[in-house]
Length: 154
Image 1 (cartoon, one colour):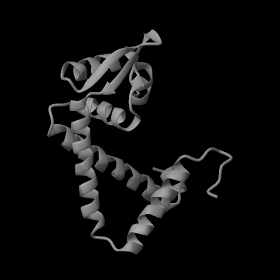
Image 2 (cartoon, one colour):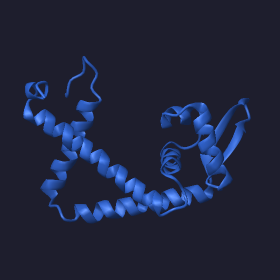
Image 3 (cartoon, helix red, strand yellow):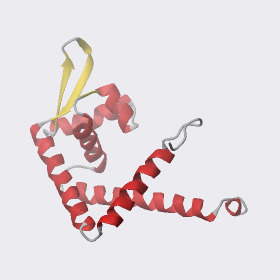
Image 4 (spheres, helix red, strand yellow):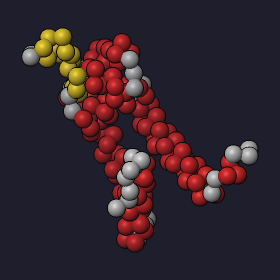
């Protein structure tokens, strides 16, 4: 492809490695979800709730990149299984709030512990300099991905 030839090789390699990183993370999450009784979308929803805490249904739908109706269907299934609690906001009954139940928290905590233990085991194979380089590289990557037009790396 003629267009690719105009990019510096490191840009194409970076794009490839970022794609591989996200693919690897997704595969790990799919595997972990398959060990439970929940689907991947349900797992992702529970993961967001574990990180963000209780949310309005509309916020959750946005965070999941789903329509309100699709998010509602997803929450219905999780609620029926006892993984989330759904209730009306006492200040505005039109607003539906969603939070993890004790059962949902136990599952997400268990999976998070598994992830952290796996990461620790992998990082134990690295020396301090490699770990510092990895952390600095992740910081740089996060910064360049989140840059606005007028921002810089300082």
